[in-house]
Length: 233
Image (tube, rainbow, N blue to C red):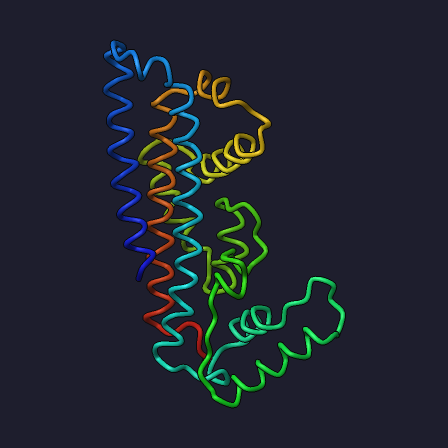
């Protein structure tokens, strides 16, 4: 899965950056870091959200790519995947039946006759996730995405084991990181003000939380693909 590649590459990059930040933060003798530490910390929060979003969105594309590559017919899909397909292909912001909707329906019917299903997130959903989850956090990934594909209860039990081991709350940390990222991205908080109120140790907990969650999430998606969860029972 391409999502595993993105996960591993960004995980490695963020790990190296975090290690460098820890080193410079302890030594406190790097003039450049001391000057820009607040901005670097704030940008790290944004990068943590970026890995969350990019991995989740790509994992969905991986499912659709697998369906296409294996020439899965529309009628073999389960109802949830059929709904995603129709949502992808019948687009109309005004929700009126007009020429645009008619053209889309014609294309859908043609593809149904051809049998093979193709969904492209970039083209069909403007590269966004198709579950209306908005800004991604633990709750909507679990409730709006995983719950549509598989039973999402097991991921909670797995995550809670890590909560106990690391003495953290992964669910809450991911929620907080998304909230902070949105405030930084929309200008509600300045990089300097936010960065001055968060420590490198705090960022490390966020990194650990998101990396653990994404690993478990990707394992769930991998299981879904291998076991052909997209097909009718």
